[in-house]
Length: 205
Length: 317
Image (cartoon, rainbow over all chains, first blue to last red; front, side, top):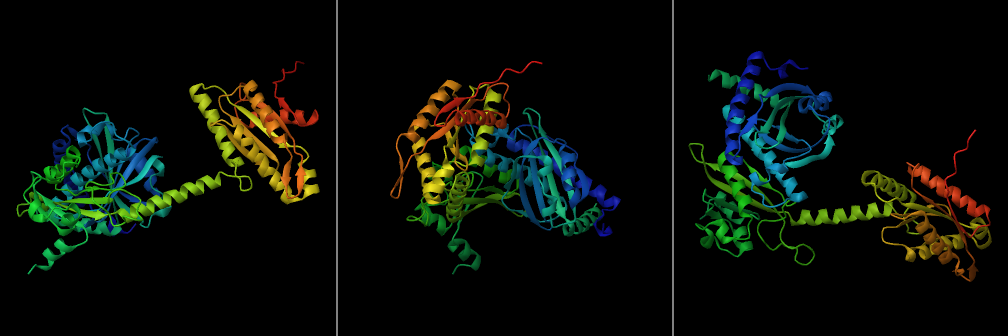
């Protein structure tokens, strides 16, 4: 791997710190939206090789059973895609929290997956961007896969990058039986941009 | 004179409007005015939900609030929620759908301190995409349907029949449902018909046999061509006696009248074999094999008859 892509120990610490702070804020904001307490894990940060991406995701999600996932692109100072991976139960339990009334049909359920995903992605990435004084904009999320094995979420043969930075957080809601994983993937050129943003962040503190 | 930015917001061929925290309209561009019939002077300052009571308020409030709180973009897509506003679309003649399909983006507009002071909403008309997608789905469905059919006779093909037998077996194993029966049907002396009257006549015979069988079928029955001059019938929730009776009716329907091809009148009969999917059968191959054995008995006993598979006692010694 090109050394340029490796985070120095300081940069890694700073990124860990930034994501921790951002997740804390995200948790508070999500609680405000969903009106329930949201628990976020400590973010896990990895540089992953495209050939190993499926295995890495499987390791992070930690279950071989079928999942449903959405994806959403972000661009600006940092460019990449975020994925939210739901287990089999999806997020149907959250329907009322997101303002859905009555029983929801298949399309509403998809919309709910997209809505919840968008909220989680936005809460986390905006927090990071703000701390790093990066500008981000988002495009509409789309369904990436429905009821597939975790290992098949991404087809490594279709990837056009070699290395990517993978940041993973998982969410649990205390009162509901809900958990999901947020994975943010940034390709090579964004890693370089992120490294300089981290350097600037450290200089300011 | 308008600034370029104001001009664009006003005239662009997409909906743009802006809401404050109380969902009051702050901006309402020409596209919105044009499609809603509500001029911007009439909309500005009014509560969006009072102006459009048909909007899904609870859900939309949540969405808009999330933009204020999270300072985040939010989206809706026509694929899940076809429209929010009941707007006419620009394909009134050729469209075939009720209201304009709409994609929305909700954007936080921040003040100098970084707080969100308003939410800007854009509406893109996705009607054309929706129409193309509907057309594509229709085409896919036709393709799927035609890949299940036998080209000559129009009845189901072997691939589809095999899949349906598999489904039936799954259903039985999952729900302990009533077993099904299989009827195999083979035209008698078909080679002789081909040799005597030619292949075109032979094809006409196959088509006519398929036509004669179908009126006697029930809705859940699945009838198809299994290959050459062999047909197969799946009878869900039917025991061996019911299947035998159905097979007799089919045999009669096929042989009752000669088949006319050009000037020729061709006498056609069929031999049939019947088997029920019951223990110890566990696979599709086993039950079709059993029906095939019964069919062989019909052929052996002189053709133009129905035989039923009876499980043989296991031989001792």
